Length: 199
Image (tube, rainbow, N blue to C red; front, side, top):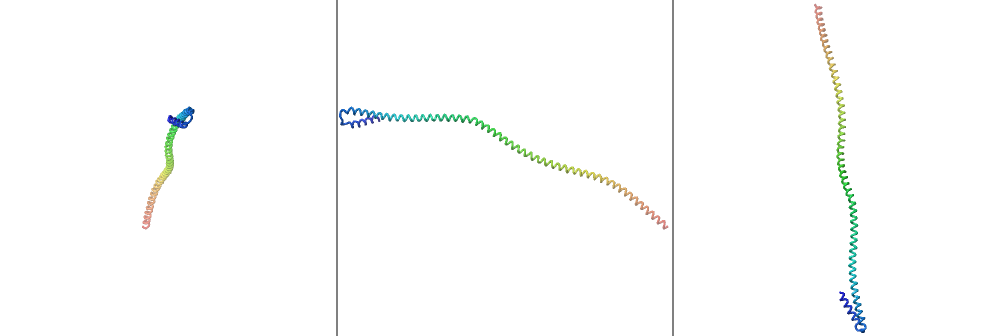
Protein backbone atom coordinates (compact mmCIF):
# COMPACT_ATOMS: atom_id res chain seq x y z
CA UNK A 1 0.00 0.00 0.00
CA UNK A 2 1.21 3.60 -0.62
CA UNK A 3 1.02 4.60 3.08
CA UNK A 4 3.06 1.61 4.16
CA UNK A 5 5.78 2.39 1.60
CA UNK A 6 5.96 6.01 2.76
CA UNK A 7 6.25 5.09 6.51
CA UNK A 8 9.00 2.54 5.82
CA UNK A 9 10.97 5.07 3.79
CA UNK A 10 10.53 7.68 6.56
CA UNK A 11 11.92 5.24 9.15
CA UNK A 12 14.99 4.57 7.02
CA UNK A 13 15.58 8.32 6.62
CA UNK A 14 15.24 8.82 10.38
CA UNK A 15 17.73 6.05 11.13
CA UNK A 16 20.15 7.55 8.64
CA UNK A 17 19.99 10.95 10.30
CA UNK A 18 20.15 9.86 13.97
CA UNK A 19 23.12 11.29 15.82
CA UNK A 20 23.47 14.33 13.51
CA UNK A 21 23.36 17.99 14.45
CA UNK A 22 20.23 19.77 15.46
CA UNK A 23 20.34 21.97 12.36
CA UNK A 24 19.85 18.95 10.21
CA UNK A 25 16.43 18.22 11.70
CA UNK A 26 14.78 20.56 9.24
CA UNK A 27 16.80 18.99 6.47
CA UNK A 28 15.82 15.49 7.59
CA UNK A 29 12.20 16.54 7.76
CA UNK A 30 12.43 18.01 4.28
CA UNK A 31 14.17 14.87 3.11
CA UNK A 32 11.41 12.73 4.59
CA UNK A 33 8.80 14.88 2.87
CA UNK A 34 10.81 14.65 -0.38
CA UNK A 35 11.10 10.87 -0.09
CA UNK A 36 7.37 10.67 0.72
CA UNK A 37 6.62 12.87 -2.29
CA UNK A 38 8.86 10.68 -4.43
CA UNK A 39 7.12 7.54 -3.21
CA UNK A 40 3.76 9.14 -3.85
CA UNK A 41 4.94 10.20 -7.30
CA UNK A 42 6.25 6.67 -7.91
CA UNK A 43 2.89 5.24 -6.91
CA UNK A 44 1.12 7.76 -9.12
CA UNK A 45 3.47 6.80 -11.98
CA UNK A 46 2.63 3.14 -11.38
CA UNK A 47 -1.09 3.93 -11.22
CA UNK A 48 -0.73 6.10 -14.31
CA UNK A 49 1.13 3.32 -16.08
CA UNK A 50 -1.68 0.93 -15.19
CA UNK A 51 -4.21 3.46 -16.47
CA UNK A 52 -2.16 3.94 -19.62
CA UNK A 53 -1.98 0.17 -20.12
CA UNK A 54 -5.72 -0.09 -19.65
CA UNK A 55 -6.21 2.89 -21.96
CA UNK A 56 -3.86 1.33 -24.52
CA UNK A 57 -5.82 -1.94 -24.32
CA UNK A 58 -9.05 -0.02 -24.79
CA UNK A 59 -7.49 1.91 -27.67
CA UNK A 60 -6.31 -1.38 -29.16
CA UNK A 61 -9.79 -2.76 -28.71
CA UNK A 62 -11.23 0.36 -30.33
CA UNK A 63 -8.73 0.13 -33.20
CA UNK A 64 -9.52 -3.57 -33.57
CA UNK A 65 -13.21 -2.76 -33.50
CA UNK A 66 -12.74 0.00 -36.08
CA UNK A 67 -10.66 -2.37 -38.22
CA UNK A 68 -13.33 -5.03 -37.83
CA UNK A 69 -15.99 -2.48 -38.76
CA UNK A 70 -13.98 -1.47 -41.84
CA UNK A 71 -13.49 -5.10 -42.79
CA UNK A 72 -17.18 -5.74 -42.13
CA UNK A 73 -18.07 -2.76 -44.31
CA UNK A 74 -15.77 -4.02 -47.04
CA UNK A 75 -17.23 -7.52 -46.71
CA UNK A 76 -20.76 -6.07 -46.90
CA UNK A 77 -19.71 -4.12 -49.96
CA UNK A 78 -18.19 -7.24 -51.54
CA UNK A 79 -21.32 -9.18 -50.57
CA UNK A 80 -23.49 -6.54 -52.25
CA UNK A 81 -21.30 -6.76 -55.37
CA UNK A 82 -21.53 -10.55 -55.30
CA UNK A 83 -25.30 -10.33 -54.90
CA UNK A 84 -25.44 -7.90 -57.81
CA UNK A 85 -23.42 -10.36 -59.86
CA UNK A 86 -25.54 -13.27 -58.64
CA UNK A 87 -28.69 -11.66 -60.06
CA UNK A 88 -27.60 -12.00 -63.70
CA UNK A 89 -25.93 -15.31 -62.84
CA UNK A 90 -29.22 -16.68 -61.48
CA UNK A 91 -30.95 -15.39 -64.59
CA UNK A 92 -28.29 -17.05 -66.76
CA UNK A 93 -28.70 -20.24 -64.71
CA UNK A 94 -32.46 -20.17 -65.28
CA UNK A 95 -31.91 -19.54 -68.99
CA UNK A 96 -29.34 -22.36 -69.05
CA UNK A 97 -31.82 -24.72 -67.37
CA UNK A 98 -34.48 -23.71 -69.91
CA UNK A 99 -32.07 -24.24 -72.81
CA UNK A 100 -30.97 -27.58 -71.34
CA UNK A 101 -34.60 -28.70 -70.98
CA UNK A 102 -35.28 -27.60 -74.55
CA UNK A 103 -32.14 -29.43 -75.69
CA UNK A 104 -33.28 -32.59 -73.91
CA UNK A 105 -36.70 -32.31 -75.59
CA UNK A 106 -35.00 -31.75 -78.95
CA UNK A 107 -32.72 -34.74 -78.34
CA UNK A 108 -35.70 -36.93 -77.48
CA UNK A 109 -37.53 -35.66 -80.57
CA UNK A 110 -34.45 -36.40 -82.69
CA UNK A 111 -34.31 -39.94 -81.32
CA UNK A 112 -37.98 -40.41 -82.23
CA UNK A 113 -37.36 -38.88 -85.64
CA UNK A 114 -34.33 -41.13 -86.15
CA UNK A 115 -36.40 -44.21 -85.24
CA UNK A 116 -39.20 -43.06 -87.59
CA UNK A 117 -36.62 -42.34 -90.31
CA UNK A 118 -35.17 -45.83 -89.92
CA UNK A 119 -38.69 -47.26 -90.11
CA UNK A 120 -39.34 -45.21 -93.26
CA UNK A 121 -36.05 -46.42 -94.76
CA UNK A 122 -37.02 -50.01 -93.95
CA UNK A 123 -40.45 -49.47 -95.49
CA UNK A 124 -38.87 -47.91 -98.58
CA UNK A 125 -36.52 -50.88 -98.91
CA UNK A 126 -39.41 -53.29 -98.48
CA UNK A 127 -41.45 -51.25 -100.99
CA UNK A 128 -38.55 -51.37 -103.48
CA UNK A 129 -38.30 -55.13 -103.04
CA UNK A 130 -42.08 -55.45 -103.40
CA UNK A 131 -42.04 -53.31 -106.56
CA UNK A 132 -39.22 -55.43 -107.99
CA UNK A 133 -41.13 -58.61 -107.07
CA UNK A 134 -44.30 -57.12 -108.56
CA UNK A 135 -42.43 -56.29 -111.79
CA UNK A 136 -41.10 -59.86 -111.94
CA UNK A 137 -44.57 -61.23 -111.26
CA UNK A 138 -46.07 -58.98 -113.91
CA UNK A 139 -43.40 -60.12 -116.38
CA UNK A 140 -44.05 -63.74 -115.44
CA UNK A 141 -47.80 -63.16 -115.76
CA UNK A 142 -47.30 -61.50 -119.13
CA UNK A 143 -45.20 -64.44 -120.28
CA UNK A 144 -47.85 -66.82 -118.95
CA UNK A 145 -50.58 -64.83 -120.70
CA UNK A 146 -48.53 -64.81 -123.91
CA UNK A 147 -47.96 -68.53 -123.52
CA UNK A 148 -51.66 -69.03 -122.81
CA UNK A 149 -52.56 -66.93 -125.84
CA UNK A 150 -50.06 -68.88 -127.92
CA UNK A 151 -51.44 -72.12 -126.51
CA UNK A 152 -54.95 -70.93 -127.21
CA UNK A 153 -53.98 -70.09 -130.80
CA UNK A 154 -52.23 -73.45 -131.03
CA UNK A 155 -55.32 -75.16 -129.65
CA UNK A 156 -57.52 -73.30 -132.10
CA UNK A 157 -55.17 -74.26 -134.89
CA UNK A 158 -55.11 -77.86 -133.68
CA UNK A 159 -58.90 -77.92 -133.46
CA UNK A 160 -59.11 -76.57 -136.97
CA UNK A 161 -56.57 -79.11 -138.17
CA UNK A 162 -58.45 -81.81 -136.26
CA UNK A 163 -61.70 -80.85 -137.94
CA UNK A 164 -59.96 -80.77 -141.29
CA UNK A 165 -58.31 -84.13 -140.61
CA UNK A 166 -61.59 -85.58 -139.42
CA UNK A 167 -63.18 -84.28 -142.61
CA UNK A 168 -60.32 -85.72 -144.67
CA UNK A 169 -60.56 -88.95 -142.70
CA UNK A 170 -64.25 -89.12 -143.25
CA UNK A 171 -63.78 -88.48 -146.96
CA UNK A 172 -60.96 -91.02 -147.07
CA UNK A 173 -63.04 -93.55 -145.24
CA UNK A 174 -65.91 -92.91 -147.64
CA UNK A 175 -63.55 -93.20 -150.57
CA UNK A 176 -62.10 -96.35 -149.08
CA UNK A 177 -65.58 -97.75 -148.57
CA UNK A 178 -66.51 -96.89 -152.13
CA UNK A 179 -63.20 -98.35 -153.33
CA UNK A 180 -63.80 -101.54 -151.40
CA UNK A 181 -67.29 -101.66 -152.71
CA UNK A 182 -65.95 -101.22 -156.23
CA UNK A 183 -63.29 -103.88 -155.62
CA UNK A 184 -65.95 -106.21 -154.35
CA UNK A 185 -68.07 -105.47 -157.36
CA UNK A 186 -65.02 -106.10 -159.60
CA UNK A 187 -64.32 -109.36 -157.78
CA UNK A 188 -67.92 -110.36 -158.14
CA UNK A 189 -67.82 -109.54 -161.81
CA UNK A 190 -64.59 -111.51 -162.13
CA UNK A 191 -66.18 -114.47 -160.47
CA UNK A 192 -69.23 -114.17 -162.63
CA UNK A 193 -67.02 -113.90 -165.74
CA UNK A 194 -64.98 -116.88 -164.63
CA UNK A 195 -68.12 -118.89 -164.05
CA UNK A 196 -69.45 -117.79 -167.41
CA UNK A 197 -66.25 -118.81 -169.12
CA UNK A 198 -66.32 -122.17 -167.46
CA UNK A 199 -69.83 -122.85 -168.61
